[in-house]
Image (tube, rainbow, N blue to C red; front, side):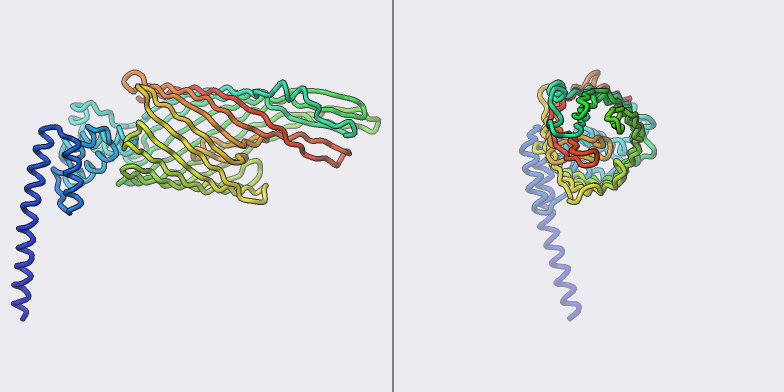
Length: 443
């Protein structure tokens, strides 16, 4: 009985091999002919059919990867070539195409990891620049101003029967920052950012009993150091972590009134000392890049917790057009309820320029964005953020020039005192316009 079962099993496997072998040969012949004819669309269709039927081999993946690359579907090309590279990592032809598929598909860190394993002769021959130290240097500047500045200064901030009215009005902000990105190990990269933010405000006082009205300037100087680490685990999986230190001081004034009804302005210094930490994970797929991150720390002396999910969609399989949607759940110790902030981006390429439109909705205050690179710690609340940016590569992609216009719909607070100790908070709204310019050099 055992011998009969063994003979039957051997016959079954032999018959299966006869059936699979012609399929393999046919696919090899057809895809090679399509490759020589440069029929990239037909080749991809044949490769897709073959893979659905379970027929997969090295040269099929190589040809499908090149076909996808030629059709500018770089992320699909990377998926095919990754499989071919897994089977034969010493093939320089595959290494070359895989490297540029990753680079063109907006997977630069993975391309750098791949290039770190290339020989010196190969990188010299193919004019590939592996990252050995500092990879890029960035500088950026931003100017923003309150579009309703004059209107707000002209408003009456206290009723006739009030004791005191107070309002702090944003005038302008000036931001300057520098950063550099460098390699630590073959799979670990770091970004350092150092910046200064100067904020000018006008403080408004109206003391009704003595009819003492006044306006005085206040100044905020804030310094930020940002450190981010990125670890490329392979197969499209990556991890990130960052820490943000915010220091500085905000110099302002407050009014006191003596028993004789005479008002005095007193200088007040508020020390800025915020810390924000983030940790995240992301995975690359043919058309998608899902990611999740967690944020914790202290902003304005309140503990902050944020959980964020984001999905990047590349409908064409390349960065020429992309959609980004994200949502954050934010627990601020200073508020009773969890707040939700959604953000969205639409980017596309037109000629040599990439254009991106973006929007964020929700109450943004004591909030961290861009993996902690941007921290909203000012007294105003952002109720909506809208912008558009343009990126222009120059000098064979060695330099990137970026311009961004942004509109923030903000909400400030007017304090109206009925007595020296009783007051109500009255919100006021204004728009802040900003223009940011940045340069990024790739070394």
